[in-house]
Amino acid sequence: MSKKTALKMTALAAAFAATAVPMTAAAEISGNLAVSNMYLWRGLNISGGAAVSGGLDYSHESGFYAGVWTSSEFLRSEYDLFAGYAFEAGGVSVDISYWDYNYPENMGSDVEEVVVGIGVADFSLGAYIGVGEVGHGNGATDNENNYFTVGYSYDKFGVTVGTWDNEVDETNYTHLDLSYALTDNFTFIASKVVAADDFALGAAGDSDDAADDLQFAVSYSFDL
Image (cartoon, rainbow, N blue to C red; front, side):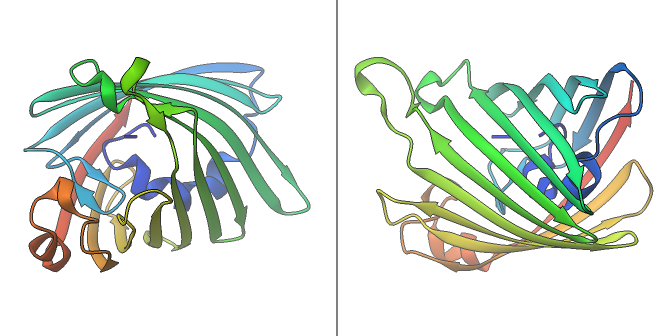
């Protein structure tokens, strides 16, 4: 699941402080493309190889924005629809958005979230609250997946701690991400799961091995 690059979900909390300020232009449409050696999603490598992603974003000086993001990696594709509102008050930036994640080859995984981000100076907080249902029809289940982040950025460096909280299954875990932006387009992220329930990492293979693995992601992105 995903924002705007293949590494977007791990980097999103650190970016809230920057994105929460309304655009100065009356309205703007922008696009982006990114290539990554993996799809790093909330501390886990969920792809079988490299991922290519891209998006289109509309933003207005009022703070409203909307867009679409898509990714194609090994065995499946994804497209996400999102809309939100961002503003700044008293040195605090706030970003509230709705995300609809869609997987054409596996519609049983389709899911929705409400995302709230708060940024103060170089610090950021993020809450990704599951809403609606996972999947569609008779097989759908209540979406009780929540994810929370705390981030700090300094110059080209960033650190994010993320916690996955599933209120139904014992699939909770916490990960630590360290990032370095070599340029505006070239980013490195090292990610490590630091605590997890026994069943938490089943999607990433053997939970013990996954918890021991240090993930290294490299992404190159550019604006269209």
